[in-house]
Amino acid sequence: MGSPIAGKVAVVTGAASGIGKEIAHTLAKAGARVAIADLNLEGAQSVADEITLAGGTALGVAMDVTDEEAVNAGIARVVEQLGPVDILVSNAGIQIINAIEDYAYADWKKMLAIHLDGAFLTTKAVLPHMYKSDDAGQSRGGVVIYMGSVHSHEASPLKSAYVTAKHGLLGLARVLAKEGGKHGVRANVVCPGFVRTPLVEKQIPEQAKTLGISEEEVVKKVMLGQTVDGIFTTVEDVAQTVKFLCEFPSNALTGQSVVVSHGWYMQ
Ligand code: NAD
Image (cartoon, rainbow, N blue to C red):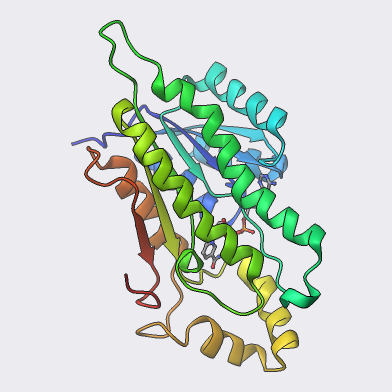
């Protein structure tokens, strides 16, 4: 049997790299028509080309998720080229680590803008399409997934802005779950442990320097020390979880967070 998301239109932000890229490929393999929205248009276009080459339907879209006009223009382009949006995966993110006393206010604002403003603005732009009703008064409905983190539930030193933003996404998802329920719109948060993407590779030497330990110790103790098996979560683990939530057929699963972390955090 085909996937229930075959033919649906999905927007994945930050999908030129890492976790978002794998999500875009996975949803496209299930038959979704996928927009790869990223600051890095060249990267987005190359992911779209890979999907098209593999027989899927994809579109690369330039989008800075912190810029309301750019978000609205990007979503309008998706609607024009692929059709009204059924699935939003708000995934774009960066990491800036520092102790609170040394954390630049500009960095704090940048972090909250990408993770929280980005989630809000993309959600606001897609909801009119999901809430739109047919002649029988039935809303089209849809799925919104926010890329949280174990840091939506746990804290780590040096990550004040990241932990604050990732906790904030739980609040946004819960409000959208309550507002969107009557329109058939579900909202959930996927919370990965450490995944070896460019975002994490960059942190290993940075954390070693700030914490005064070796890079090997950062990986073994800081990143994987609290997992049940010392193993990194993979992009595939996260993408399969997103796909499961996209395919789930009812509001039974809404306003939740699903932690994918080799047991680092257990809810
Ligand atoms: P990544 O660096 O590989 O990819 C992030 C993508 O986001 C890049 O393509 C980048 O161009 C894009 N981006 C950055 N700022 C943007 C903006 N303003 N507008 C649009 N796109 C923008 O990172 P990743 O590890 O794949 O992270 C993806 C998401 O997963 C992030 O939200 C991150 O916090 C979350 N996450 C990552 C891990 C991990 O261990 N890698 C763990 C938990 C959660």
